[in-house]
Image (tube, rainbow, N blue to C red; front, side, top):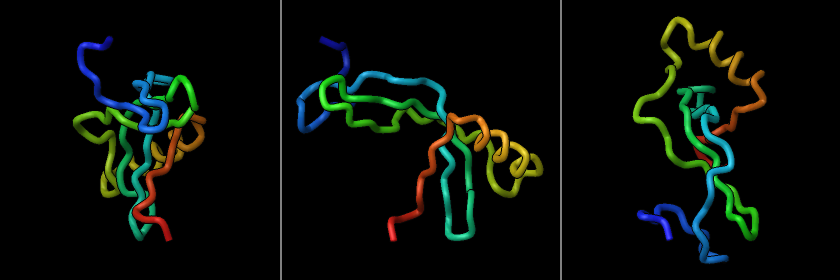
Length: 89
């Protein structure tokens, strides 16, 4: 058993496992991309449900910073990026 249970699949009652560390999360706002974060992708070993958790303490970049547009393009082309919508319409 893990020392500290932090993420548990409600359906399967099993702890999520880290599927991939160091993914990019692009946080969106009404005007478009807002911030870029680094986080980890977790997966339930039984049902395969996936969640993003383990966000870094500080964002990688924010929309007003000079390098943001170039960095955003690199992140989106990396194949390792996920979008965090502001809200579901």
